[in-house]
Image 1 (spheres, rainbow, N blue to C red):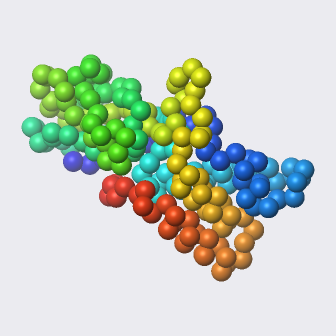
Image 2: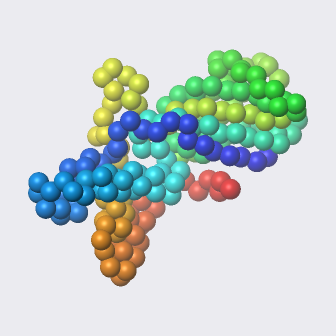
Image 3: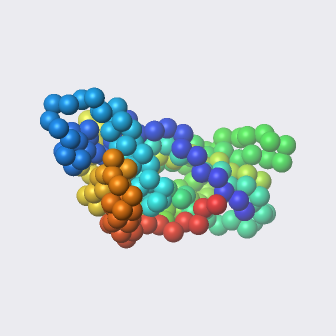
Length: 198
């Protein structure tokens, strides 16, 4: 089997606000000239944390494509991003490249809140696709409700790693940059899911 994982939709908010990041970076109060650059650092820091850990911080949609599935070989598939909020679409692709959307109720996710959620066929249909596409929402914060959940549900460890990572790239000398990047990695390392995704 081979895998590819692609983000389909981005989060609509960030775990760390511009005000929080500016306070951490000790920016001069009232100065807004660097706001766009700092906002970019916030996004990059979140993406670094998510890529390093295999976790999603804020509600976002992912598509996992699993190819070269051998007949009867698959019992379950590791989703490679967590925590899982919901399955949104499951499709099979046959040898001719024809995609067929499958009934969601025939499939389920187990251990959705863990580092290693997995997907499986919960129905009675024979599961024999050449390629399977699984679209799902993941994140500590579910933005689909009314009112949507806020960033307070993102564990502090993730936010702290974001702040340190951004500080390392914010106008620091080489020594401080390396030190801060190492500390950011140490802070977040316990949350890492070793997914070995190529």
